Image 1 (tube, rainbow, N blue to C red):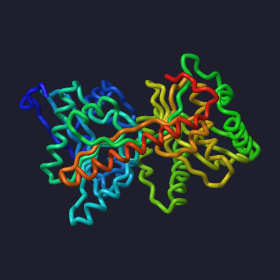
Image 2 (cartoon, rainbow, N blue to C red):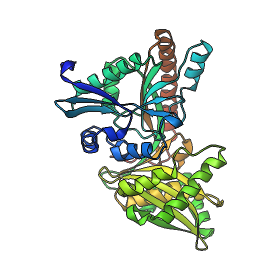
Image 3 (spheres, one colour):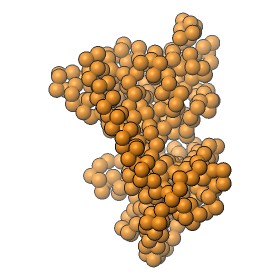
Image 4 (cartoon, rainbow, N blue to C red):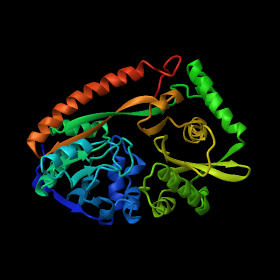
Length: 392
């Protein structure tokens, strides 16, 4: 690795409070793809609110590496007893283990719980220390007798480190919107004008249906999102899960923590009709990087096309008005292309202790990767724009 590992102190932590927040955030900010979701405050809120803890299948096992008492590398890791809340699906792998009488769980996961946002995962001051961090991570998985270790939604630098270490890579697809460059869109109509006629017409029709239904919006950011707004949003959030016969991942206490520790990173669109709030869409913000992330949505009554308006058109209009350069729409959803979001490749990395399973999964990933490449080619042939704009 080009460094002497004996000069480093490696620790595993079962509580984020054991790690200095300023040191963690400082290391994060020096990475190639920092996001708000890997900030110490965000991850600590998941823990403190009991959203991602041992009882919910997310046992904290954060790894840190120090040199002369200075934090040089770190990774947010979890011992998982299931594969919910990850958005990179390995249920078939777990089933294969079970059919062969082997335990797939617990496994070691490096990811942001419930958050499929690409970004830095292996925080390190240098490439050599990133390699050391990855080696320590793999050694920890082996010492614990775990079936596997997984790093999800990696940055380019992390992907390169995993490639050097011989980990298997898995590709996926998300849909992101990018502002035009070098001349940003003037407004939403300017953006829509660049879309193909059928896409532009459909968007106009959907927005008109919401207006004709008498819906107007409150847009609240930061400290403007008071307790009442958070309470209403959380009611909507739980209704979305109920509609899918599921249970919310995040507790109300998590959003209380966010309001207290990271208010500047949240934007809420509250839809009103006849003076009453009927729906809420929550967007995460990275003001420094000028990036917005679509996160959560829900409604207490049905209005045709309100979901598309609250979750895509209103946020995109806000991003344009506020000179944001990217809006990430989250995992899956080809329907996002018709609304101007384009396909983007994502990457995860995987290590399996059992060489037989590793060989079989490596073969599977090669075949799957070829399919993802073909899928991307197909999507790119269905561009929603009249002429593909230059993007930052």
